[in-house]
Amino acid sequence: MDSIPCPSCDLFFVPRNKLQIYCSGSDCQRARKALWQKQKLACDPVYKKDQKLSNQKWLLNTPDYWADYRQRNPKKADRNRALQKVRNCQSQKNKAHFKASKVIGIAKMDSSKPSKDMLLGQYWLVPTVAKMDPVKIFITTAPVCSP
Ligand SMILES: [Zn+2]
Image (cartoon, rainbow, N blue to C red; front, side, top):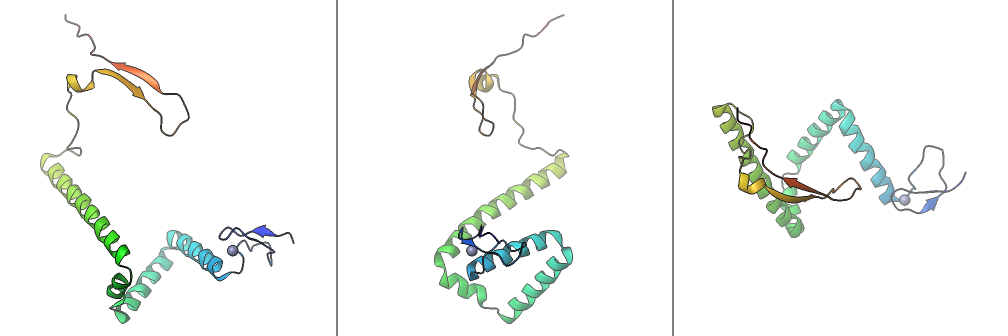
């Protein structure tokens, strides 16, 4: 059998069978299993539920794990605290939007208000995804037809 590159470590190896795509290195096997588990969690609701129960049971038996983790990894803990503040702000924003939309009865609360001064002028539309040249556009007022 021909040697193939391992998707994890990029080293060539001779697979034992046609299905083997990762080499037998422990890090590569760990990567293979993590990918398998990610796909399984996305596709199998029973497996996902079982994993959640298993994790909860493990956490009950290991209550100090996260406190120890934060002490062992202060940079990661700081990063997570900063990201959590952002998530909390977004959550509060979403709650405020939801409450306001329930009271008023509309979904979009921050719709832009037409302002002639803000929109009139020349602009360049610069594509960020598609490969095409920037396009210059002009925004002017439409003439109002009077009867
Ligand atoms: Zn490998």
